[in-house]
Amino acid sequence: MKRGEANRKILLKQAKSALNKNWSSLGKNQGYTIPAQGLYPFQWNWDSGFIAYGYSHYNLPRAIEELRSLFKGQWSNGMLPHIIFHKNNKIDTKDYSLGPKFWDTKSISKNASKKVDTSAITQPPMQALAVWHIYKALLKKNKKSAISFLKEFYPKLIKLHNYLHTQRDPEESGLITIYHPWESGFDNSPRWDKALRRIKPKKIPEYNRWDLQHVKSRSRPSKEDYDRYVYLALELKKKKYDDKKINKSHPFRIKDKVFSTILYLADIRLHHISSEIQKSTIKIEDWTRRFEKAFYRKLWNNEDKLFYDFDLISKRQIKIRTIGALMPLVTGLLERKEVNKMSKNINTANFCGKKICKINLFQSVESKENYFRHENYWRGPVWLNINWFLWRGLKLYGMNKQAKHLEHHLLDLVSKKGFYEYYSPITGEGLGAKNFSWSASLVIDMLNDKSHE
Ligand code: 9WN
Image 1 (tube, helix red, strand yellow):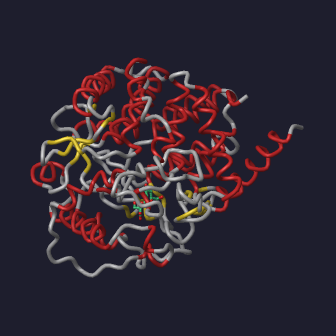
Image 2: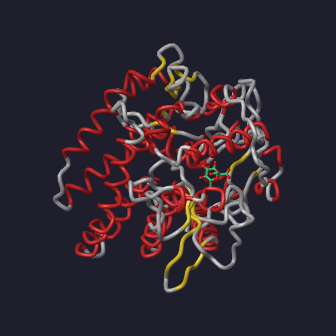
Image 3: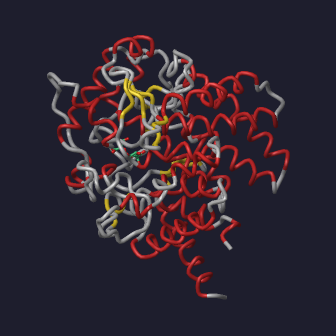
């Protein structure tokens, strides 16, 4: 066996063991995966989509169970919450902030899940991607069970996508509105700075910074940001989590390019799923057409050759240079000449600028920006889920050299440092939570990619 191959085998074993450690059993083969011990003790929405990708390569029943557990939290209007507070004796929900008591979903909204406590906001919808990925793996084993798996998840997915395309896009613009930075998954990204600074929070009840018991404050959102997160959550609660009211007057409403891009990718999978089980695809075609029309017109910035979010309150593009600005690349909708226009930006060294970066991966924010902080969460560090997406995007455009480069550096980083939540691009140090599930899971997916040779 060649040395490279042996290293890949070792890494695969380590990644599986990291992921397995985060399994949280609910008995009788039921359970879910926490993102990480301590800091994130429940089930998170988009995390579980990434996590299911990893399991699908070596434990299909668990990949399926991961999604089943997540959908236990789905609301009757289709909304899939960003946190599902499963009852697990090992974890005391009263200590976690913002926990189930704060959201109080069952008494506030008739739509809330009756089965389990949840938050009242959502996250980027990775589920149809995961379902389609699992289906392809099941198909290699048994067509009948693969189809019955699709039939089980189709109604949940269609309900979720329908919610997003109606309640989160009442304008039928093809782009999705988020109500809270947590919904983006890029919590304290500078993408949200301007919109957040507009908000002057009044009377916030005392809340506990659970996160700071686990991670150094310089790697987490500031108090200024956190006060606004709590304030926005309270505002949503005041409106009884009612989308109609929220869409009229909530102080944070942004068309999120990453969320909308992921929903587009998910819609394409939902289209495949529907065709496979002979369901109508008309509505889905309408949804995908809307995005195809809108994303370039509304989000593309020709001067900077990047995609930006759109603030519904200031009615302006948010011109902040972050890794999210490259995301629409993964749709494959851009023509080659447009991708060429972006090529200066699709370059890890360019993102790093003059600073000497230890690792050649896409960092969340360009070093030259004054809001860049190499150790602070979504304000500079390298995140593996976004690099995984861009790796797929590069391959989609036949940019194999760049994709290989990215893969090489990503695998090298985790071999040396382990599966951290994020990494400083300057020092290469692993930051945030240790043994982070999606970092392990997406490495498993990368290592199983047959085109690596
Ligand atoms: C709030 C779980 C989640 C991820 C997000 C990431 C972080 C939570 C937090 O952790 O957010 O949802 O407490 O900071 O930003 O993307 O889903 O891993």
